[in-house]
Image (cartoon, rainbow, N blue to C red; front, side):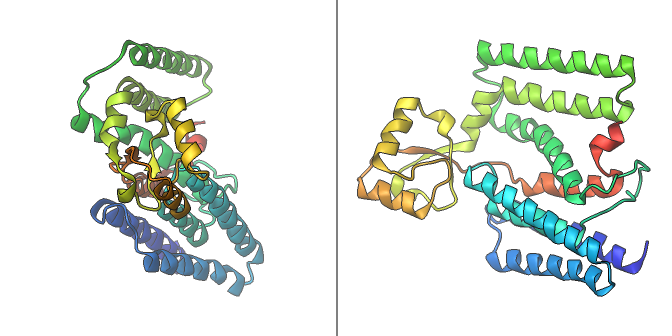
Amino acid sequence: MDALLIVRVTSIIAIAAAYMLFDIFNKRNVPSVFVYATLAYGALLTMTYALSADYYTAAFSLLAAAVVFGLGYATYRAGQLGLGDVAELATISLAMPLFNTPLLASAPQLGLPFVLSVVIASGVAALVFVPIYYIPRSGMKGISKKSARKAAVISAAYLAFIAFTALTGVFNIYGIALIAALMFGSFFTILCEEAITGSMVKYLAVPKLEPEDMLALNMLSRAEISWFKGQARHFGQLVTPIMINELRAGRVKRKLPVYRQGIPFALPIFIGTVVSLLLGNLLLLAL
């Protein structure tokens, strides 16, 4: 491993760890200065490719980071991801556009973006992490028959898929372990959906809303959502300054369900980054 690659590897581990620590210990808030600094540092590492006349990788890196930021920003506007998480993934993409030789595995990476491996591994880690994080807080109380049936159906589908892949040899042992991990996370997340969601949410009056808050719209009925939209034209899952101003102008007194106890998603991203460095793309490893 050459010196510059060592710098890239250590840099993304350090950056992912810093984002994780901010997410956990700073109330999910990452300082803007730190976000801009890491993006600039990632861009600087991308420019080293151009300085060494590797213009293809430099262009690939910029394009991949632009796609990551564009898709991530759309996901953020939909209220499904924090803007800090988007910036972190874009930084990782800039710092390490490609990583064709995982440290422990030998599966070829087929020239796929390294950040794609991180996203896949982070998604798996998040799905497994959700029940481990929330069930001890919320318990397994109030499990509905509907949730139990859904969890049973999902588990049966996973088991059937595991049996199929084992018999046909589509997936190796790593693939079967990956599907088993997804089954675990899906089963308990669906089974305890109401309790998990309840432990994430706080009901807040309009004056206590903050920009970047995410509303738990699944906790509102269609009639309630229509009523709020009638009071605020920009009402949506992501709380924005204009939405807050519209709700205040309408003197809305009703409290809104807000995700204030969401998982620190930078933790799954950190796990996904380390796993991707060690094993590469989990889907390629599974084949």
